[in-house]
Image (cartoon, rainbow, N blue to C red; front, side):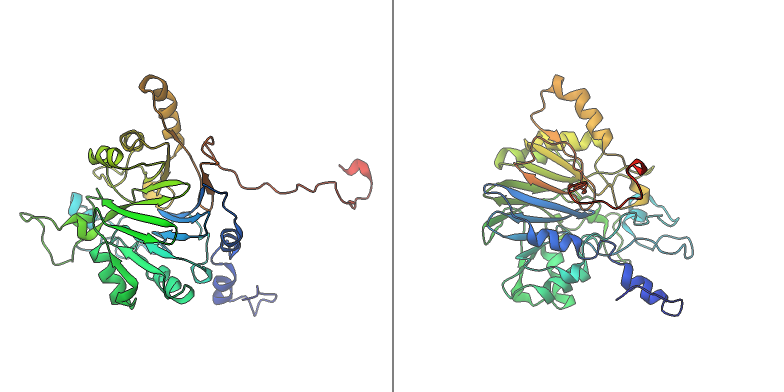
Length: 357
């Protein structure tokens, strides 16, 4: 929709249609045009734990893309009954989780997705608009891959069962040039995410393998470990012993008082060491106002500890919409977008007089 040119045209609907997503199709176009060097893979951070991975061979894997938002009203000031945070610590006051990052990709303009991977059942990872957009714009061979309860939700939404693949730890699925391996997830918050009328006290929890998995995406350029919303676990070491892990993507956040829902800066470093990763990239710290954290804390701790503990990995810090190519960028610690203006003074300028500069 064109932007309003008169007051009459400047309606709320025109504002929304002409403004969101804030990046329009800029990133869609960049991903489509990107040429991945041989023996490399390229990733873009789409917000939260959302990742687009593209291989040298042109395989496109979409993971955990979320196109929703957080709180939009104070309402009655109370938490939804049975919410996992209420179960965790007995809180009743409304969680002030406002979305604090823009939408950097237009889901309905996504093309050529070969597989959509969703790690677990939480609504900021399992998104109906992502599923609809992939169904609308991708071919009949595109697969929807996730644990049992994720797939049940997709089918309920209208994704054909034949397009879905249920995975549990140990399962492997080949998608074009990529092998996807499901591994154990350590998202204890997911175990508390049950129907409102279910009482958990005194009962065995649900089976984690039905609710959540971590993913190992194996490419000709290296392997990505997507840890989603896992909490710290000693079993990261088992995963590191049994698999080659080059890049780890893992959640990070500043846990509010009385809650443990995100990995801390120390946990991020510990998980990377346990996985024997070469690069660790924190995510999820960007999205919720009440869990917002500064990833420079991770860098500071890494610098303090890397010499004495002989770390064989380093962190990479990015912002939503940024990209990372492995191993081409394996020496980098930060990302910066193209600053533009490379053609400054290569063409005639137009000034009243030279001293204007």
